[in-house]
Length: 90
Image 1 (tube, rainbow, N blue to C red):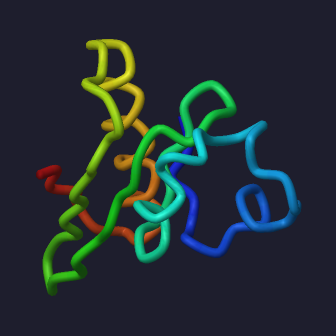
Image 2 (image 1 turned 120 degrees about the vertical axis):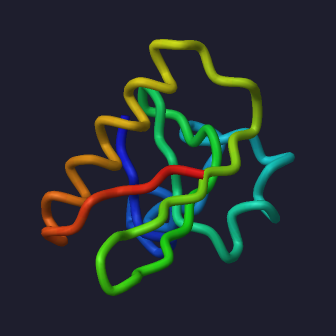
């Protein structure tokens, strides 16, 4: 599970995007950062930086399993550690 930025080459580096996401969601990806599950785009995320925390909001294309939810939380925690801020998920 990865939290990628919106203009990461994983999603924009190739002309044919079908290998990484369902084209019916292409307009959902325009402004959001990208959630990647098992090599496929499964939703978007955004962050709100605050003085004492970073808030991460996710929008998935389908309901997440418990395992996927844990993976998102772990990726968010890694991102928070990078920013040296605690993470609040919404």
